[in-house]
Amino acid sequence: MLITDHPEEHEEASAVSPQPPCSDIELRLQVLHLAKEVLQGKAAMRWETHKQMEDITIDSLIEESKKLYSFVTDGKS
Image 1 (tube, helix red, strand yellow):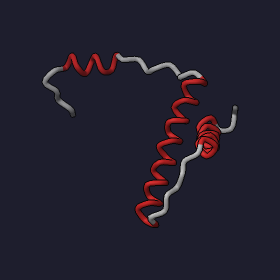
Image 2: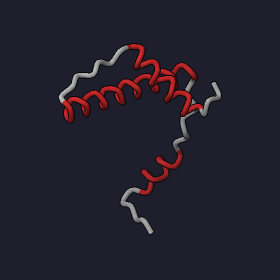
Image 3: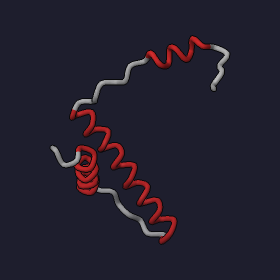
Image 4: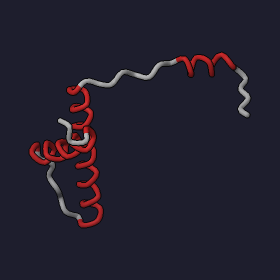
């Protein structure tokens, strides 16, 4: 059993409704940002392990974004 000092905080937290699903454009922008982070992480790991520079091109960013978007939407779009 969980005992809290402020029961009203628990009530407020449970009263918050979930956010509505984001629009297609919002999802695409989020996926684009995630793809950028993934490619930057890969480039950093390549530098740390092999001391090789790996450029992140717009084309590679778009391709990675398409893969992630397809995965997230389960290929429905």
